[in-house]
Image 1 (cartoon, rainbow, N blue to C red):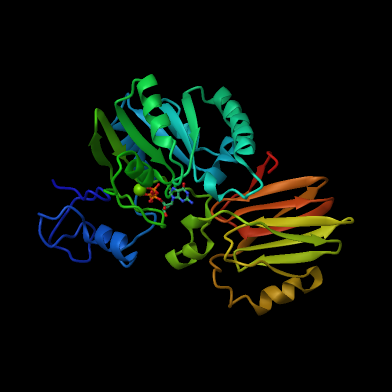
Image 2: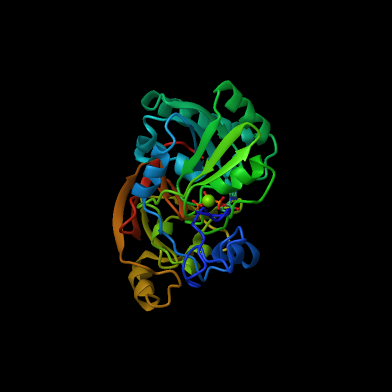
Length: 347
Ligand SMILES: Nc1nc2c(ncn2[C@@H]2O[C@H](COP(=O)(O)OP(=O)(O)OP(=O)(O)O)[C@@H](O)[C@H]2O)c(=O)[nH]1
Ligand SMILES: [Mg+2]
């Protein structure tokens, strides 16, 4: 059975609207991949199409392979409270912490190294199967040499690229093989089945991305997702306050803060979107008035409360982070489906 070279889906000529459609079987790329790569067209795009059970079955087809686990930089900050690594317990893992370019300017390379060696040191105690880790991003050019040296050291020939949807798996393989044969896109769920690529003496296997039930991206439609996704260096939006305030990020997130004295809040989100601030006492009014206007409103929000003594970083997967400093009470209204994570490292 011939499969699409971009996303792995079996090719077919019968159903024009179906996945894998090609005009004739001579073609190597399905209509969806073609339109996605050339026009960024998402008409045939279905998010959350592949289930995690199916993806794990793909992993199981490669016993003894090295698993290159690609993790988005923000996800790594809460990896110890996550269940991702449990899926790889019995496999040899090389961890790639990707998208380091989105961290704010004040976090220079030395600081990044320090923060992440600490995180990885702690993770390694619970998961000794993590053989090595590399921090990288798609603009960085030392990566390929480092990566191939590690494959030699680990004596790995079969290499499965795994991880959550949109972590950058297909982009990374394209970079390693100096080609753009795999389809990549800004939307999660681009790769649909495994794609095997033979390169030098290696067999690289691209896989679909695991769905994260705690990530906003899982619940947003494509348009809403596009607006909230972070893909450039974050410039935090910082507010000082000494009276109760409410902050709104469209209908996606509301944070009420009641300070004891002076405090501040920083939002690490997509730079294009501006946080709206209002007095706490007007918060409910604002919310009601704009309830139907919120561009991104998807589901009812749940409230998590925090009593902050010094400072706290709260990670909201798929949206970004907030850092609250100074003694205060904080009420974070966020998508009820997604748990919030407290991040212990200071940024
Ligand atoms: N800022 C930034 N964006 C990246 C980086 N690596 C990948 N991306 C972007 O992330 C998006 C997803 O990349 P893909 O390679 O399609 O991700 P994937 O893990 O294969 O996604 P699925 O197939 O959906 O699981 C694309 O828009 C990439 O350009 C990076 O290092 N930094
Ligand atoms: Mg992919």
